[in-house]
Length: 250
Image 1 (cartoon, rainbow, N blue to C red):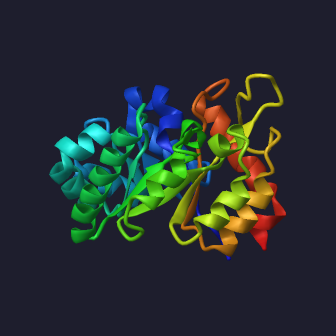
Image 2: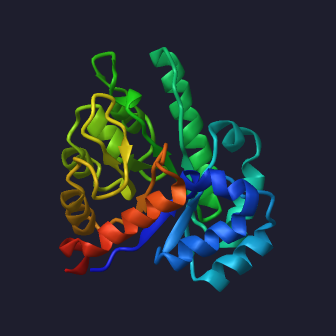
């Protein structure tokens, strides 16, 4: 089974702000199948939809802040339905108490229900702090134990899982029924566990891809939070290395 390769456009934010459509064109020319948004850079839904079709890029998701999900949900629903994107991802949350996390979970269920009623699906995207413990369990587990499995899915960011000293494959297996999107990125072999282009670091990307294919992941999403030397060069290296991986050709 071939699995689509997408780019989280946050990786290219330095280019997006000056020429968003030009950046999308470069993403397409590199051979990526789709994109995941982190903002729309003042484009209308109609213009964005037309350009995605012209460039043969599929919208696989959109990262929308928790604040916007609470305060501008109708806008996000209408915009994403118009561009043909069905996956809405809450990209970040951090709280100090279990009561605050419990309240967050209630909000996710409410938002997820509204999205579901409009044919869309809510996801939560992790970093490493969700693998701190609260009441004796990972915050990550607390989130999914306290949200409806049909309303709130998991977009597992395998880099942050690895950085938290948790096995990404075991986590993907545990949540295989709630995970249809994953982020892949690589890690330098340094003391800071810095970001690296795919195939240039120490994470076993091929094993992650193999398991992603086994559980019918919708797309692999390439991301680099701090790309060096810049976002375009970084995703160019990543797609080149991904194209050489035998697992993607099986």
